[in-house]
Amino acid sequence: NPTQPGLGPGWARVELGSAEVYLGLASAVLTIFTRSIFRVAELKAL
Image (cartoon, rainbow, N blue to C red):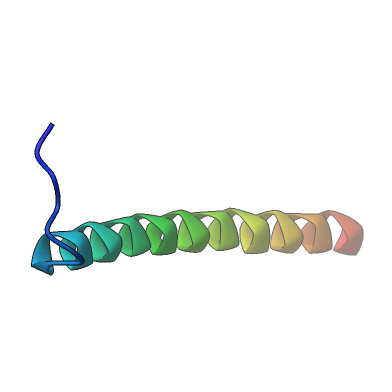
């Protein structure tokens, strides 16, 4: 169990990676959300 000497570059890398993951998840959810909205609009137009 190695101890981290303060907030080093390793921590910044971990935070950057998690932020990237969250951004990817958010964009995926947004894409699905907008697609479902467009699908509902198409069904209403029929």
